[in-house]
Length: 219
Ligand SMILES: [Zn+2]
Image (cartoon, rainbow, N blue to C red; front, side, top):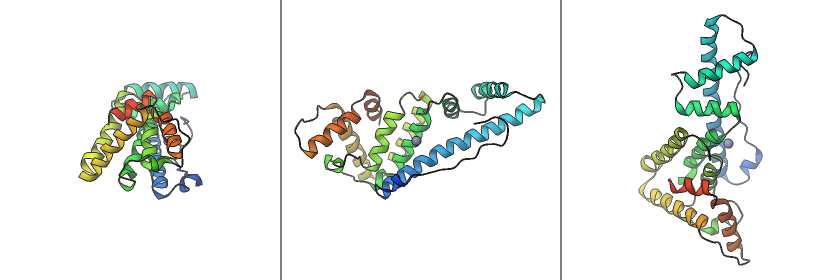
């Protein structure tokens, strides 16, 4: 984002591919992108807030001075909480773990209850996970390295969804899916040349990396 000139604006674009994999998938992608947009809006608000403060000083800043001034303000302003700070610093360093973790979690909680409630490898034979499971896997993968405050917020969001939104039956399904995914990630997959065995190998390859397993085990 630039520090002078007009404040940036936010647009959400969802590619045509998002609509090829069913309504749940499209909805999860849209909610995911809206969460990124929410983060950008927060950043723009904070930029405007800093500018108002900086303008009080009265001196004209160069682009570098403005960048440094804003970055300093981000690390010490009392109006910025730890999650916002992680998002702002992530944007500054082009490390997207925080915004991706929160966006994938938002994608997950928007569709899990709409998707298949009984876990089975037969739901993965196309090489795609069900929409919610895709978002959950990616939260573990792309969210790796996000600071503690963001991880805590992401886990709290899932816990709130599970405890306050899901029915008892859906909570059971949630538990069953998490166990199923951890098993896929930890058990050695079969080597036969059947569709089911190759889907199991693909799932294992996606779910066995430590960051993904560690994330799933926290749920
Ligand atoms: Zn994203």
